[in-house]
Image (cartoon, rainbow, N blue to C red; front, side):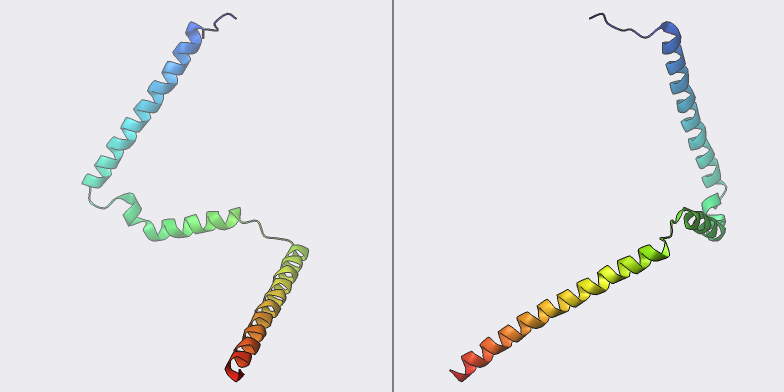
Length: 105
């Protein structure tokens, strides 16, 4: 099998992308240093407003279930609760009967 070597133009474009990313990181770090020197950062100044903006954007991402899905899930939960309650009641009754038997013997 022949080795597939990337062309020179492809190497240059990859190198250019990497350099652009590196420059962006450096600029972001410099910007963060400048804002830290100026006292409060933008995050601290607008924390209250940012919280509500983030809250609004998160609510837009919520996918609410349909009414039939809610009814179905509620039925499953209630059925599981009844089965669990009966199971615990059965164990409790059995252990109570064994304890009474042991005390009367």
